Image (cartoon, rainbow, N blue to C red; front, side, top):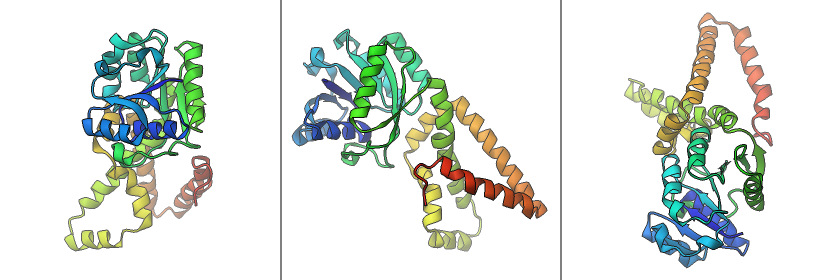
Length: 286
């Protein structure tokens, strides 16, 4: 299949690396950075690259376009492509929020299928891209309003990168990722902000010196891309607020048990989390 990629950052660049490794480099890539375009072409991960769609010539050979931009640029990027698209071209994205993106994109292009490959690192940009990043990671496909053959093409593409497909509605996706991806960003950020509010400078400096693997694991996503966190809060607001409210309620329950010295309640809560954690981490993390 002929593939075009809009956005050659961590995700788009890693897709390009995988396609090149399979011997079928992307027909083209679009990037805002002229330097990135040059690097991608020099490395052979795209056949051609440009900063503007009018500079490209492979439109009729392009069967699938992947929009790998930040959330707020997905629909505008699609709009920029419209004058050049072949009517049979299928378009997908990699955004971490689906319902508002899919709804708006489908008003512009009926062969749009929402995707969310759930792989990545805290880094960003083409320099962070690497081959093999998607292997055995889950990928959500939300194609309930797109033509069946368009959905099948998108599913086939992600399977070619050895991803594990999950099919669901955009709304279900957004509610689920609010729990396991978006809420942790703000819980982690809240932990870091709370530590920074310690008024005793000696205690705060000692805390920084003593912080080890547990703190690094718990705070990692709070130290990620701030712009991405802002976009998540804007695009998945309702689901995120719902999960934050539930989390705050649980924290108050735990605080109450600690304040009362209710060891039975504390033990029961921690036994529950110990037993249930493996259901969210497959294979179980050690």
